[in-house]
Amino acid sequence: MTLEQAETTKSPVIILVEPQLGENIGTAARAMANFALTELRLVAPRDGWPNKKAISAAAGANSIIEAARLFDTVEEAVRDLHMVCAATARTRDMVKSILSFADAAQVMSERLDAGQQGGVLFGRERAGLTNDEIAAADNIIMAPVNPAFASLNLAQAVLLFGYEWLKTGESVRLGRETQFDGPGIPGLNMRASRPATKDELYGFFEHLEQELDAAGFLRPVEKRPIMVRSIRNMFHRIGATEQEVRTLRGIVASLTRVHKPRRDVP
Image (tube, rainbow, N blue to C red; front, side, top):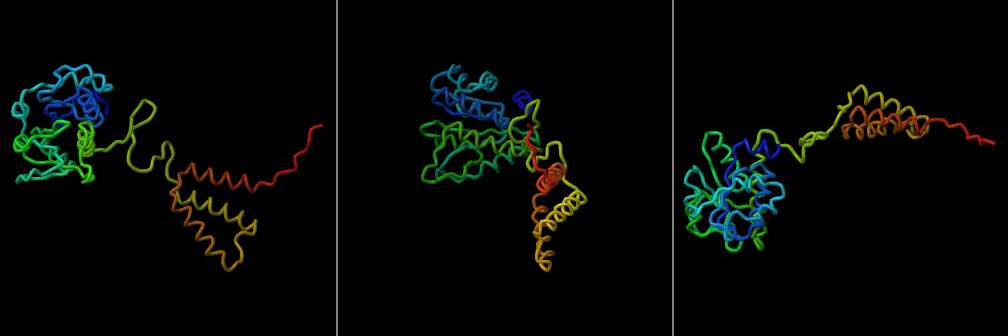
């Protein structure tokens, strides 16, 4: 999915509360673009807005920066949302539902399908969200982190949620899609080839075993069935393509071909 395509697709709103540095806003926007999060809201950024350093750090996610909406308070930033989650590393001793980033992304996906909009609050780089800001959220969301070092920077936190958000889509695609390479699809990429048929595999087995017999490898005779079975099992496990089977047959043919002595040209 390109950034332009993502911008036409609904996604949860990312809300940065009093972010301190323009660079951090920019890298958060870049993380958003990586995972098809398209709407950014800023609550009272410390260094004002717009911010040239944010555009520079966004590294191509300029459209998200340029479309970012500015608010004075968290309450104003979330008024039109149906569900708000607050990202934090601590429970703050509140009676509040706690969701993983993955669960929060799934719930927001279901809400979007129902025509509702959700958003995620991310706090200040130095101190995170205040208790009052967290109290305004429906749920707390937390990532599995090292409890001895649980603090994430702003872009990291946004990226973790974005990663889980993109996984809620109908088809997960990996990596970058270009005019030369299609998207990465989970599983074995056979490119232009296809899985070998059993007939092709058996043809290879007959070829290989014939040459191994001629070389005296499948001896003694009483052990031949076990050795053949082991060799066939090994090649069955690799799930070879038809191209790979042809390559294997070519290797066997090349190794067993009788070469005539080379004659020196006077």
